[in-house]
Image 1 (cartoon, chains in turn purple, green):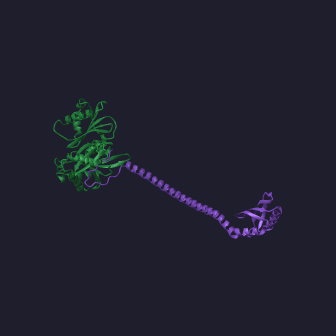
Image 2 (image 1 turned 30 degrees about the vertical axis):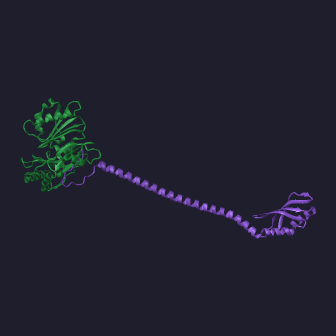
Image 3 (image 1 turned 180 degrees about the vertical axis):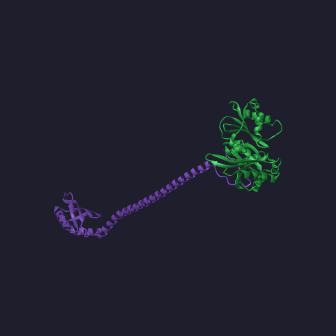
Length: 171
Length: 276
């Protein structure tokens, strides 16, 4: 039977039909589930954002460390070169070689490579083989030099060769 | 809609009181008392004064209450008689607030200012409603006389809408229901539980009322007929017993079947809406 209309001059609030109450209850239940699901999802999203921020921070930290290591590597090489050059300047090496060579031998070209080690490569001209032998003896006897190794000789009156050696650093 | 209190119905010829109780699945009338009124004490009217001789109506009401209720007073639902309201089947357009639209549609046909009207509606299906408007001062007269008899009025209904509410939703064959009050009646064509036609008229109790009602019922049945055999005619309410006897064989001649009675409405037509 349909809900009868009320013509009271002072009507009382209508009591909703049971069907509407049930529908309202179901609706409220669905709404509560939706709110709970939304809340859970929101919390999960917040946790995910926190994890993302944490990962981003870790990435930033690692990148900074990588950059620091890189800077330290490149700068360290330069520093070590500078330190080596400061410790053993080229003029000192030249002066040492000049003092070691006999009068009948000369250095035409000298390369100095600074690094962990100080490598020397010099092109030497000796007036004759005897002068060449004395040159090698003198260089091998020089305490500042190590691993003195002569290259191929070209003997056409004069002896021309390239000698490689390591400068012995005092640590 | 109804609790276990009293239902008080007014009409021109009598005041009726029913005491209701509820059994699982169905309401039951614990007690019913009808006390006659002298002519002119209560005159159902849409615009004029309804309670003409107030003391007489109050005494009749008190007598009826004392017969069906052990105590005095209590909560009550009032049932106002047919003949005081303007009724119409209305189909509110989509999106419109139905009660506002009913008020708008009925306003122009009311014999009193629309601002004085109490408007409400009875849903009859998903699209249509029966809109009803009664004058506020008319309702107040019934409420006051009930209050003077010690009743606390909870709700106020209309007898024709209560009867209609009891008829809607019932399946079965097409039927024409004539539900009569003392001064007015409704004619409703119901097909498969749905309202097809609704007419609300003041009664003309002069000679020949029966044939006139029958002719109108036959026209309404043809208007709403589905061609699936004879349509049931059910006649209930005030004076229905006499009219059924008068009509008798002429019903079949009019192409209808009956006249039948509405079992729930034997005591009063509005009880069909309470018990249905």
